[in-house]
Length: 112
Length: 109
View 1 (cartoon, rainbow over the protein chains, first blue to last red):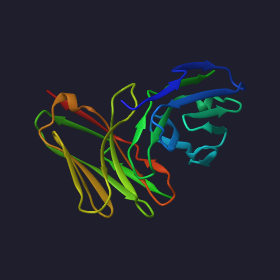
View 2 (cartoon, chains in turn brown, green):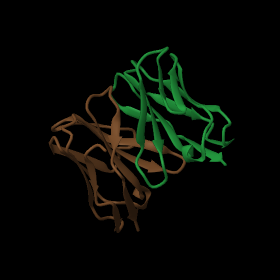
View 3 (tube, rainbow over the protein chains, first blue to last red):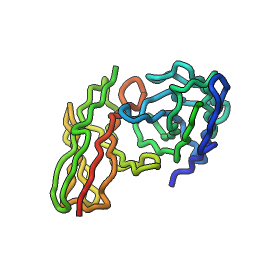
């Protein structure tokens, strides 16, 4: 299995609070991605990174920010959590843009 | 904007009944077409990468093919353990990995 770890695995938080999810890799892959997965929508890209301090928006980036200060860590922050951000969040890594991505186990986030 | 569409949404097969899953894509400057399998409560697991029209990849009962507009995942003589959600994804010139909504496959014994 690819060395990719998401933390926490489960989290319940209150509306309006900031939340940070962490993705850590030991593969030294260049690309890292954050997705959310919801019934009826599939996997939707939130943000991705193509190198340290190099990030870009995906299709559902509103309300989310990311940071990548080291190759191995990619952080996803919900600036002020809302109930619509209740979802399962997946981190993925890939060596290059045209190679396969490997996924973490996911973080189940509930905003109450 | 890149789009990936999978059909049907769900498929129920009898064990041994072969079938195909469809993935249509509209991607500018295709760099790679990927198939994944996802089991409930887990992250997607990589199956195949295809890069150019005419390419085929095979693994056990699964074979993936690619044309300029579609990809197919052919399942030959499926078993109940092949039951899962199958995801198609594509990367284009914008470097974004875009997924379809997935096809839920159920194989009855």
